[in-house]
Structures are given as structure tokens and as C-alpha cells.
Length: 164
Image 1 (cartoon, rainbow, N blue to C red):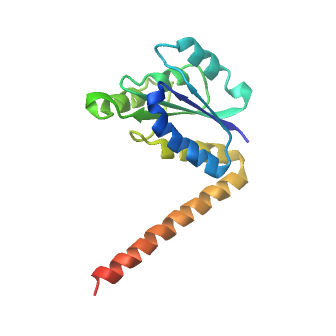
Image 2 (cartoon, helix red, strand yellow):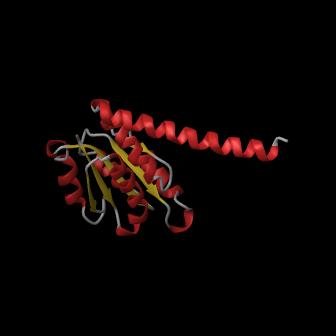
């Protein structure tokens, strides 16, 4: 199974990244996490991301706030899928990070999830890896079924309470 690389621009991003890690663990997907900044440690980002495919990674998740150039810096040096998690920080509530992450030039795509969207970043990375792993694809399908059942149970409770 391919591994998921997780890089974050600061340890202040850890709370969001931990949500992604929980999902990866739930699905049994191997991962590796690091704190590297696109601006303060660009050589580490470049070295790691440019060699990630050869080291068994299938996806890179990059979490960063404010200027949030980390996902773009990663995507610029690899052809692996890069998923950006814009992190809420500063006075703009994460909108600055969202725009920095999503506005990539043609030829350097970054898939972008919601602000603080660690869970969806992990699920998207699992979906990508599951393209070549049927067991993982089935685990995803089971998760979707369980999610649906939870919503239907809530619907039934509301109907019973309100539709009398």
C-alpha cells in the first residue's frame, strides 16, 4: 500500500493534522508527518517532495495557514497528487490560506479541501490510494454506508418527534 505524506508549515497546524492522522489510522493507511515551512525550510520541502514517489508515497497532504504556499511548493516539485489543507489563522479566518492554496497556476494542480478540513484531506488521499487497492475501496464504501445509516437514524428520530 502506498503511504501518505503529511507536511505542515508549523506545529500550530497539528490539531487539524491530527484529525487527518486519526482517519488514516482508522483505515490502516501508513503515513509519515513532518513540520517544514515553504518559506523557512524550502530545501527540506523540495528534497522530501521531489523524492516522495520513489520512497513509496502515493499522496502528499500539505497543511498551512496565512500565506499557505506549502501545498503549491510541494506540487511544484512532484507529480504526486497534492492535497492542500488551508488552516484557519490570523484575522481572516482562513480565507487567506484558502485562496493561497486553491489559486494555483495551470500545470501545477493542488486539490484543496475546506479550511481546517483534515478529515476530508485524509479521506481524499485514501480514495486516491484505493484506486489500486480493492480492500481499501471496500473500507471506504463501508464508511459511506455507516455514515448514511447514522443520518437515516437521526432522520427517523426527528420524524418521530416532529411529524405527529
